[in-house]
Image (tube, rainbow, N blue to C red; front, side, top):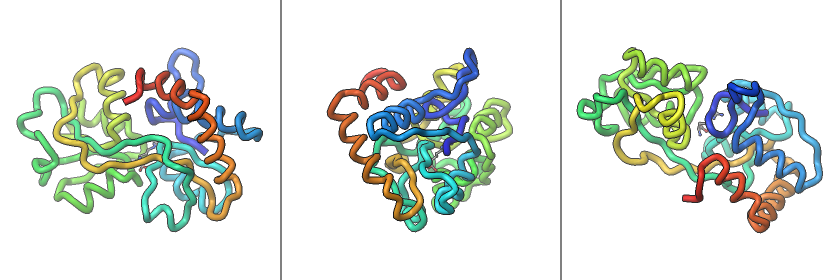
Length: 219
Ligand code: ARG
């Protein structure tokens, strides 16, 4: 199970109409390395988080942050990507909102069911607008309906540089370090196989190749 609206991890290439991204390359490489076949189903992100525990899917890969709460119902692979949350605003309003300390009473857009939504609820008095798709959150900042957006740094930066056309800029520090893991139903035997495949891909350099393809150079 994966999503199709999360650059550059899983999204539809506008030119080819194909589902592409770091997660897609990674899960294909893992399947090949571990010797199993995969079928990919696309769905909305919060649907993945709730479908994995039910065992309806064997694997979920969707830039999913490993959290203590999710670990109650989901087994995660070893971490495969270091991320974190960053705030962004419309270019020109960096003075009004220069960090998370400035969002109380403002409208902040994000994605429903994400760690950013939880962060806003727990740490701010912002009016939270949580959308089913993150592109709607960016749109609402671009059109002035929301004052800021809070989301995962790699996605915000990728969007800002591509579709965002330089009109969306990040402000303040990384708010919460997070790590992405591949999700499995509790007790899945696939987890160890996948972890071993990730080790092998790291050793062979294939993991770095995939990383660099989407992020152009390791950080
Ligand atoms: N990392 C955040 C979370 O786990 C957001 C992930 C969104 N992923 C996606 N495919 N839309 O809550």
